[in-house]
Length: 74
Image (cartoon, rainbow, N blue to C red):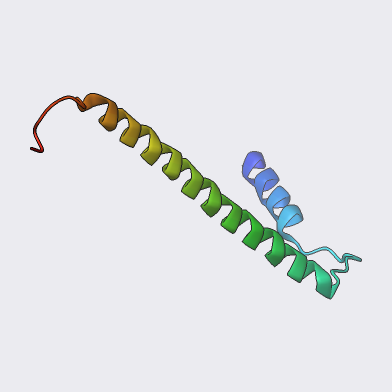
């Protein structure tokens, strides 16, 4: 029983709203969205570059396997 009372007391202390003197200016929201969009688009560019390198690697690998002296096309 004392443990449950302790948990209840801690829950009330942590969940109770406390008065704060915080201020968020209007530019903070736009800065947050700018950082978010930069992160998203930067990640997309990184993925695009990665797949381009992967495609180049496999296309070079496949072209090395073909024998240039074979007369399959003729």
